[in-house]
Image 1: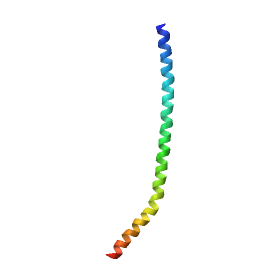
Image 2 (image 1 turned 180 degrees about the horizontal axis):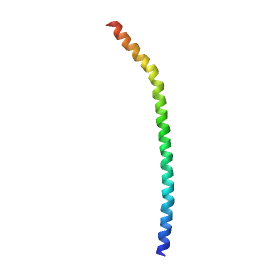
Image 3 (image 1 turned 60 degrees about the vertical axis):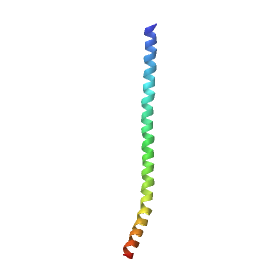
Image 4 (image 1 turned 90 degrees about the vertical axis):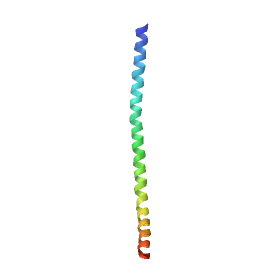
Length: 64
């Protein structure tokens, strides 16, 4: 009876490990997508922000 319990426990642990390892891969993909989205938002925001800063420094230079 003890051997049967050990076998069942080992099987359940193996199934749990397979599901856990697949979930880690999905989580990494989700993090990758979030990082890509943040990079796109930053890239879009840098253009207008750079022009505003350039205009600000241009005004400071002209007043000096």
